Length: 282
Image (cartoon, rainbow, N blue to C red; front, side, top):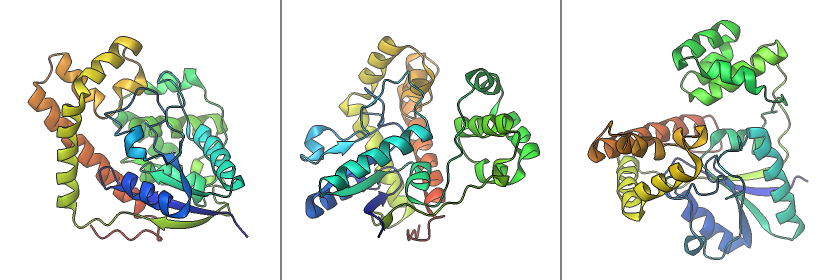
């Protein structure tokens, strides 16, 4: 019998954090974050990281575990999340994997077998110098199937795909990427009434982030870490940095932040629609 895990997936601002915390209190559970930005220390307001009050005494795993300078990979997440899940199970509790990073769910709880390829930082830097459209054209030539899967992905994922293809000298689509799921998963998602409602929630969240100190947090992180990649490529910080640099007014920066977050939510929904266990009607 496979170990039982509950998964709470959903786009940003959908209410999945509150849902996971409520579930955890009902089933004697602990939460394993599935969010690629919550792993970073100091990424609080922009990442909508739940504070200790919001967590209501429920243990959370894989939050604030590395400094932003560290390039935390999907492979790192897979190893750390499995360790957390089995630790929770060993203590007779229920693991609840909750978040919005679709790839994390895919490799941890679904049937995707992650190719284990050591990072080649020199190759990655060379690829990163190219524009996203140029990278997509190269990916299309080398692996059209993977191109179709990643053409709407962020630049970082496209760079990593090209890195893997070049190092293994083989298209990802020809690799054995299917595996038997390790866990018996009960999938859940907050009820989404309409896309309009979700977008309104996103807009309100951005306004709340500013009230909570998003601008001050951005200044603090800039002073502490400088313009490192994980910082300047994070939605929330990148728009406020443009405001601080004088490129946009504050109003323009917040409008862009709302737009970018809505676009991100659309990409999340597209990813989660691939999972037949999740019913998405918006």
